[in-house]
Length: 596
Image (cartoon, rainbow, N blue to C red; front, side):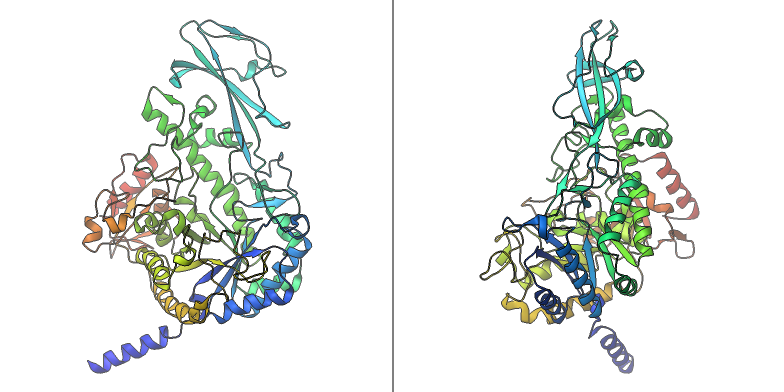
């Protein structure tokens, strides 16, 4: 027995005592644009390497003291800096992640025309109230919300029951009656009507710092992919020697939380959305599109327990309202995955680059499904506030797809020098406890920046904002030991195969977050989603996942072990009040095969 223990200890030591660089933690570097020389850039990368960090995620930040028309994203200086960082880090065996545009908020391209379909689009709504039997004629209503280049989509008159409450079947499509931007029509005498006029247009979302206005791409149309491809080919992937190095190294394209806006409109749109909706759902969405205005009707960035996904307008049949909204946001989710993520990932992979994406939160997209379309899914502790139950929204899709799940970590507000190693470990351990196995620390900040005195560049001048990893910190000397410890854990978590006890079927559009919330559900021993902690308290592990994963690639039911792979689920739990017919059929098939 002692010999077996000794061999086990020896094997454990051989495997985990000195973890490879590739399994250690990563860093986000908020780099001050234009404030570095080639020498200082190399110094910073070498400092990260010597501290034991596995990779660097590069993000350029603006500063009022810097001329972004010269030093911003898309310029010659930024191209030089990016290529220098790629060459330096890859030569050291580190990974490099390129953030998807100026700043971090969106995927954006300098000089992109915001009025083309390559750029982010929205749908704008105008309402006109008509009494029973009233006639209207003349020009369609508009106001300053409309951009010079906008497109009329259609008009629908909806029978009004009360303020912002409408009949589900009392509508008249008026689109064909609109001529030269005018409409003549008399409302039926049976009720008052509201005429809904729809236009599409660019949102003109811009990010900085950039040498030209850097507009957000269209996330729901392949033309958005083309805009990113052209930028990358012209500004990053235009060096054959570096391209070869990228193919042989670990380079990732990183997309942060989705922070695009609907501009003057009320939800995202793309040119063929109505056609795609009809093909996928079997009915015309235009008579109901107004239901998405201001949905959800509560701040999605603030926690609301079991908040309904409804907006400013509803039907008399509230269940029908919710079903239609689910359909709208399901189609948006599918277009995001199929028309943007999948083709972009395929193109990146052909260049030796993987796609890492923070999944869906902050928008009305389904909270877990896009995990299936990316190489490396990610969440963040700032908007999930270190809550294991919220993290489970991402672990299900990652486990069943056997994907390494990472988290942007260390980004809690107003916590700069409140952070200690114990606090960093506390955040990491909560992530590890539910299945995350990669930490990307927020943030590294160099000595070099607009402020020439200690402590140096603060990353957006948020001096009280976040802890800043870097050589200026007295704790820098302990980073190697810190990274070795976490590297051992991350290597262990990536060893073997997933073995989660229970998969909980969960479909959620417009998931509310907990950014800024002072409550701590874990410490208070209170549930967030599944209304009981009995499973957790009795040692069972579980994930939340959309039923769309049940027939995803490589997912299968192991009849011998009666587990759903690749997650190892020994049972599925249905606890939501709604389930699509397609999902019910998938689950029934698994039950017939023997899935508990």
